[in-house]
Length: 164
Image 1: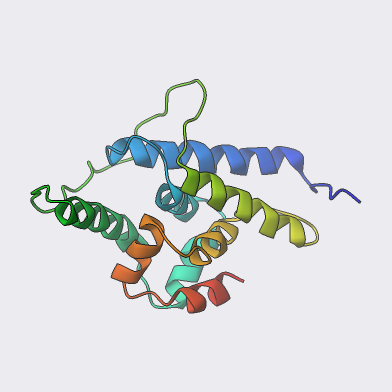
Image 2: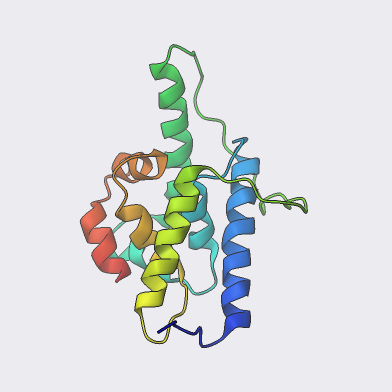
C-alpha cells in the first residue's frame, strides 16, 4: 500500500526549501556540489525547528555546525598537502540565491535526502521535517557531515535519539 502525504503542497515546499537551501549553503561556502553537510545546514534553517531542537537537546550549538564543516574542509586540504590558512568565514547574511536549472548534488546529499524521506514515510501521517535529515546524517558512517559532528564533540547516537 502506497503512503499518501497528508499535505503534498507542504511537503513540496519543505523539499524545495531543503534542496535549494543546501545548494545555496554549498555555493556560499564555495563548494562545487551540495553534500550531506549542506543538507543538514539547510535542515537547521527550516521553520519547523526540529533539527535545531535536536542539536540543543544534546548540548550542541546548531549555529556552530557551519564553522565545524569549514574546519573539516580545511583539515582535509591540509591532509593532502595543500597549505591553507584558517577557514574563511562565509559572508554574513542569507545564503546566496540559487540559480534556476537542474540541481547538482553530491552522492552524500542524495543518500541523506533519500534516507530522510524514507524515515518520514515511516511515520503516520508522513511529514518531512528537519529532524529526519538529522537522523539520516547521524546514521551515516563517513563523510564531512559526520566528521563535522565529531569535531563538535556531538555523540551521533544521542543526536539521533534527540531527533526521534
